[in-house]
Length: 364
Image (cartoon, rainbow, N blue to C red; front, side):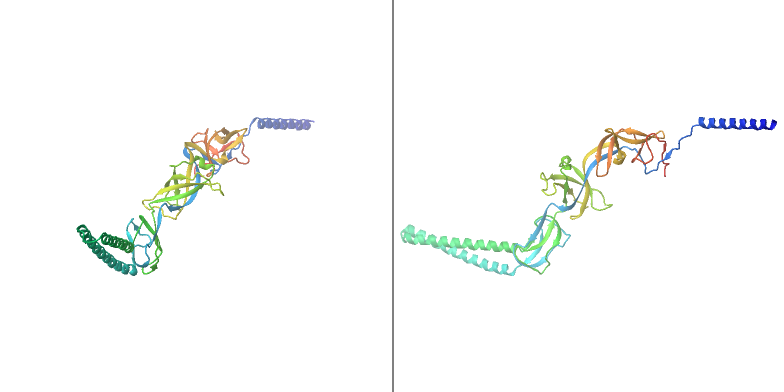
């Protein structure tokens, strides 16, 4: 009997102990485990200038170039410049050797001398006839005949002089001169080659000012103005260059519906070369010292934009106002955030508003 009572008392004590243990467990709430965020998940806010841009591409072209041709045909006796040489307007760049012009010039000079002699003789006869007619020694018909001979001699002399002037010009054209200042970029003949009248000798381009023809959409052209400054590069890692919009074609291309924007580049130092391919941006709109987030960070709920912000160890929703978006970089400037706050770059699976989160440690 005593053993039964002892067993019963042990059972009661064990039951009470178990109940007490269960009550303590129920009264001790479990601390939620914070979810660790990585450096790729969050972005620390920092004020920065932000711009909406449109990218463009195009080739750098001279705004002025010229093809130099031979005014008179002949052999190229001397070619005084080569590709890459700078020339000034009026500078002799080639000399033509035209033997036929020289021979014709010598013959024409003799013709002019003869016509001058005939004119002098006709003038002397006319003067004599005028004196004799005044004294009544010759008839009016003889005077008129002397006057007519003088007119014929004068006309012949002027014609010979005109031909001489033409040949002198041809002779002067043997010295081929640069029509503009610039750089020789294409040599089409060599010394000793025969060139016909009007034949091309070389090409010159002005490279101190270049131009880019860029195309933009009908939506983008609304925000672009003449005088705007643009930036571009000609190669990866190359220095950033600047240009200025000088013209905007007011009519879109019939096929692409794109508008052409002409960008002028001052290039006195020769930093860029004609023919290089340029890649750059035209600023359409900009905001100074704004908080900038990826477009993926911005969510919508009931017509209100918001982002997820880590505040006091928890994930919270923060309403924001989108000030400016740039589709080129997929970023947006927003209002409603403060510098130093941590924002989720995009919504993460398994993490919702109110969850405890832990920011990544520096350097991890």
